[in-house]
Amino acid sequence: MVRAILFDCFGVIITDALKVVIDELNDSNPALARQVMDIIHANNRGLIEVSESNQQIAELLGIGVDEWRGRIEHGEVKDAHVLTYLKELRRRGFKTALLSNVGRDSLTRRFSDEELKTHFDAVVASGEVGVMKPDPEIYLHTAEQLGVTPEQCVMVDDRETHCNGARAVGMQSICYENFFEAHDELEQLINAER
Image (cartoon, rainbow, N blue to C red; front, side, top):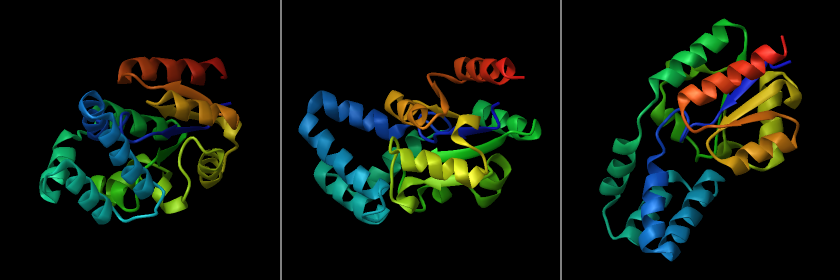
């Protein structure tokens, strides 16, 4: 029986501005795209601080740090449909978690404490726990934080590799493309087990 739903942040709750940048770089300079991703992964694992990763990326791109941060911040938009649905799920008795491959404190820069408390029973950032999706440990850690088994969880993520990581530990998973399809698929999973 589904008791908990885990949501990815970027590409599900917030528009993934970084993905847009990486896609553009992949078209023009794949090697540079890889370098930027390596820096981001180091930050997401908690190996370097966000200020250092921002500085390194800005230098690689030949722009100022403020310009880099502005490009990402202006491209990130919270999806009101997803946030409303999260509140509804919690009212219906489901536990919810935010599980994201992101550096330390990155989520608290994007969500107020009140937003995090309103929408989530647990918040897990890879940079704080030292492992990233699709590593099995991060899914197991999140289920433990929620007080449920992996089999009682559904992971909603926009990356198939992360969905597969969740499935590998026994979770069900939905590969997110848009809110309406994900909503319908999640409701079918919930209702199929009642």
